[in-house]
Image 1 (cartoon, rainbow, N blue to C red):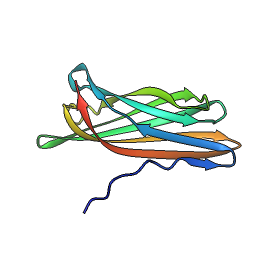
Image 2: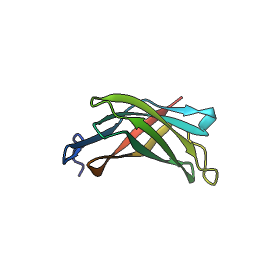
Image 3: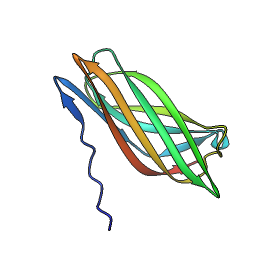
Image 4: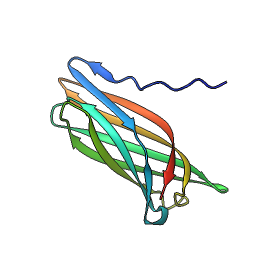
Length: 125
């Protein structure tokens, strides 16, 4: 039995607000050597926030996976940003098809916090 997924719950405490949402389309780069993952982030952290993205995809009899990282300044409202995730050289290249993407945002404003989103998406060319 599957339950429909609802919107992510954002982190909010001590005046700090953090939210990250995985968006589509996720696009192949350099014949699968990487993918560009669009995100919507909303935050009010002081200075910048760190965003970490992990992509995992079943490819034939193996797995393609990789990690990406970026730093962004908070504006206090929703921002569309893109994080490039490079395929792990020990794994396979990414291909068109479904993949699981996990995104995490970390930031501070008097206190520090983190928020995550995990989605199953379709990777396109």
